[in-house]
Length: 236
Length: 229
Image 1: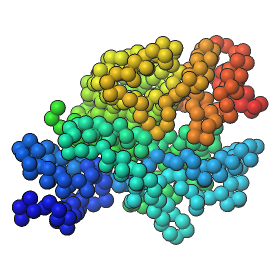
Image 2 (image 1 turned 120 degrees about the vertical axis):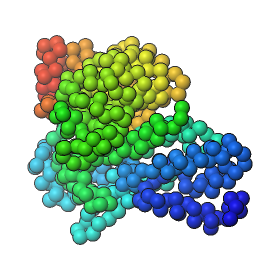
Image 3 (image 1 turned 180 degrees about the vertical axis):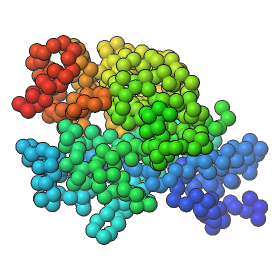
Image 4 (image 1 turned 135 degrees about the horizontal axis):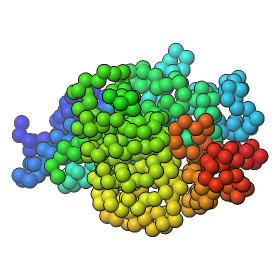
C-alpha cells in the first residue's frame, strides 16, 4: 500500500497507531498519537517534511512515560481535604496519636478520598478486598499536551513547551502545601488517608502521606528526565 | 562511594548497593533527601542532568564542578549562596527554589539559558525581590511554572520582618489560604508553625525580644505565639 493511500483510511491509521503504542504497553506518548497519521501524511510532501516526520516519529518513540508516573496535581478543593481540615480545627486540642485515634473512631477514612489522582493505570487504592483505580484529571492533561504539538514546530520547542506545562499538571508531592500546621500532624492525617495507595504492580507507596508525596515527586522527575534526555539527544 | 550519593542512587534505582556501572551511567536525575553536606562523586554519573535537594543542610556545591547540570531543584534546604551553583553549572535552564534560605537571586542573572523558574517562599532581600526577579522573568522565554502561584508581596514582607530579627525563615500560604512558617534545613525537631493570617505572623515577629539571629529562640517564640493565638 502506498503511503498516499493512508489519507482518510482511518482504519489503517488506527492500525498503525495501535501497533506503535503496542511496542511499549502501559505508557503515555507525549507526541499525540492521534496525529500519527497526520505526521506520516505531512511527511510525504517534500524532503524537508519527510525529515521532520522522521524526527517526530523517532521522538514519539522516545517520549513514552509509564502511565504509573502520571500523578496529577492534587485538587485542593477536594471535599475530603476540607473534611480533614475542618476536623482538625474542630479538635484543636488533640494532636499526634490522639488525633489519629479520634479520626479513626469517627470513621474519617479514605473511602471517599479523591485527593491523589492520576492517569488510568497510575494509582490504585485498597478498599477492603477490592482494588480500586483512582483515575481523574486525564482530560485536562491530554488536551494541554496535545495542544502544544504542531507538525511544523521545532521538536526542541515542543519538548520545552511540555516541560513548561508539566509542573502545573503533575503533582510535585509537596504535602506541606495542603496539610499546613506542624509536621507532627502529617502522620495522623496520613494514617487516615493514603497508606493503601499503590501502583499498577501493587507496590505500596508507603505508610504516610509524606512517603506518598515523595513517590509522586520521584515519578514526576522521571517524566521530566525523559523529556530532558530526549531534548539533549536532539541535534541543536 | 559517599553515603549521600549511595542513598540517592538507592532511591533512584530502587535497590540497595552495590550499583552496576551500566545503571549509574544511565542516571539522568537524582534526589537527595534529608541530609547534609556533599553530593558525593556525582562526576561518575556522565548523563546527570537534574538534581533535587530536599531538606538539606550545609550544602556543598563543590561536587558539581564536573557535572553538566541543566535542572536544579531545592526544597526546605539551607542553600546559602547560589553563586557556587551557578559558577559550576552555567547551563542550568530550570531552577526550583521552594522554602529555602536563599536571599540573593542575582547569580541567576548569569544563567543566560534559564527557561523556567519556580519560586516559593524564600526570604529574599529587597533587591532580589523588586529588581532581580522581575528582570529574570522579563528575559526571553523565562517563565514561572509550578503547581502553585509564585510567592507574593505579603509573604515577602513577612519574611523580611523576620530577616530583620536575623533569622531566615519561610512563609508559605497553603491551599486552604492559611499560612505556615517553615524552617529550612535538616535535623530540626519541628519544621512548620501554622497561623491563620499573615498579620498574626507579623505580630509574633514584632513581639520577639530574644537574641538577634538566634533561630532556635525565634522558633520557640513562634510556637509559643501560635499556642496563644
